[in-house]
Amino acid sequence: MSLKGVELQIAIPKTFDAGKVADQLQQQSSIHQSNAQAASERQLEKNRETVIKSNSAEEASLEDREREQAEQERKKREKKEQEMKETKHPFKGNFVDFSG
Image (cartoon, rainbow, N blue to C red):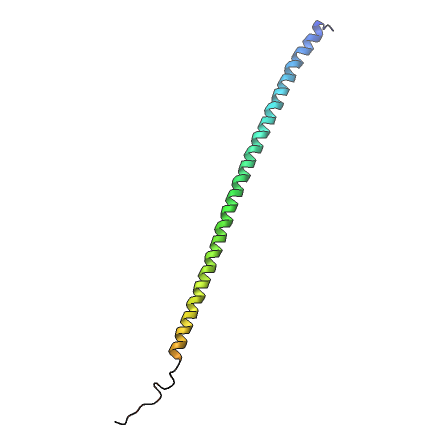
């Protein structure tokens, strides 16, 4: 298969154009891959922060529950102390003997 001079004038520039297009496609695929990697890293970091936030929220709710329990125990103790103060002894303080 022999090419004539006129055909070479058309074929050689098209070869360069085809090379440029192939190079652009290769660069484009590497750019897409790096963008996908960056997006996956951002998603991974977001997931890490979400886990940390949910753990801190869980710890906060645990602390709230502990505070509520402590408050209930304190109220029970105060109620018992109040009841102890209010209870009357069966014979103390009911009769005063003024005879001497």
